[in-house]
Length: 155
Image (cartoon, rainbow, N blue to C red; front, side):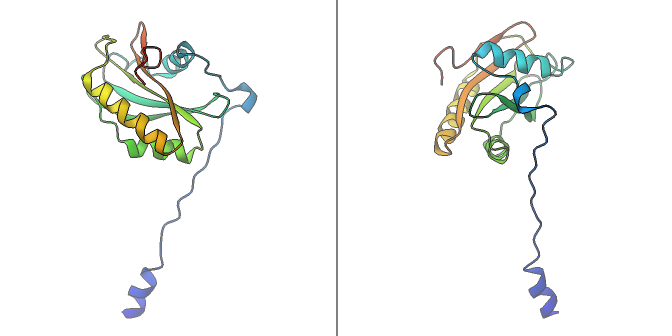
């Protein structure tokens, strides 16, 4: 019995991280302004859900601001979704992203950031600084338009 307990102390699960792009590095879209990020996000968003429930995604960028990928962080109800900073930065760090762009939709069509949006963004920006992982923007998107925290000086 003692040997079983002792052996179980040394048994751990292996964590494996992999990245398998669907296209060549030279074909990755580049983000140079908020409109680029919005277009990439909007065209990869599930259009059937954009006006149904709030979702939160991140765009993962390399040093040249080329998009490495897009990851869903959370999906909520009509008026909100929870964002866990550990998921945001866990995914960004595992993918070796140099920077990220935050994004969520407002099913109501209202582009004005809520107080919760502003608070959460500020917290994530501060955490990103500690990890040397820049948050370049936070985009709120709707079916018709977008709001950029970066363009409005809110980062």
